[in-house]
Amino acid sequence: MLTDSESLSYLAPLARMFGAAAVQLPALLDAYRTGGGVGWAEFGVDMRESQADMNRPWFLHQLAEVLASVPDVDAVLRQPRARIADIGCGAGWSSIALSHAYPESSVEGWDVDAPSIELARANALTAGLTDRLTFSSADASGLGEASYDALFAFECVHDMPRAVEVLAAMRRAVRSSGAVVVMDEAVADTFAPPGDDLEKLMYGFSLFVCLQDGMSSQPSAGTGTVMRVDTLRAYAREASFSDVEVLPTEEFGFWRFYSLLP
Ligand SMILES: C[S@@+](CC[C@H](N)C(=O)[O-])C[C@H]1O[C@@H](n2cnc3c(N)ncnc32)[C@H](O)[C@@H]1O
Image (cartoon, rainbow, N blue to C red; front, side, top):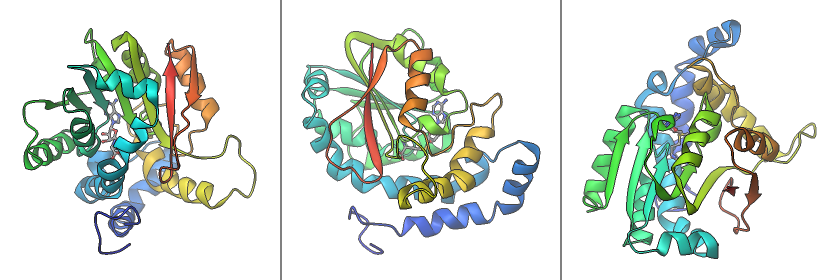
């Protein structure tokens, strides 16, 4: 849990994440008083890298198995020269995992945070993935007319100030036979006080990190870490998807996978 950075139980990066939030307490307090936020850039390197380190073992050691267990999505990804976008890719570990799992694909990681993209490029280089894996430092609402076979958003929709704009861009960018998959926190369908342990943990992340990040650029939906199925469904419908389906994946840490239907 503390020393094996490849273990699915690895939690040491949480200490660094708490540290990154703790030094921002005055700014967080101010944000709650004024309706502002504290963005990823202000949280800085400790937040960015601890986020990446927390999720890395799951992406590198479990993601391929999870995607292989969903035949429709797996078939799209297995197509020769499948073009995949990884939206809000952070340090790129999910993009690297997708590239390894689907060696005939090309993967493009997108993130609005430039230092995350620098980190992702360095990680891809170390992983020996240079030709089939590229990264763009840009807001994903500007995906443009590109057309992809599959688009993913791993643990980032709830952070986005304007999630509907990004989902709408993903909707426009997916080919008619393609797949759009969101991975986000596996919180309860409705709030039932006092909330289970997962809800409490996620509200903690929300108050100190995600809601603040989402509120740092206005206008903002102010979603926060506790994004329930109905919230995602409402965003997806507003973005011209017909519905959201929870994928029948085995337990994957704190997360749940959703397919956004055309
Ligand atoms: C909590 S981090 C998750 C990063 C990575 N997917 C992971 O699982 O470790 C959320 C990421 O979404 C990115 N992000 C937020 N809004 C975005 C947008 N509009 N376009 C692209 N990236 C965005 C942030 O910069 C941040 O890197």
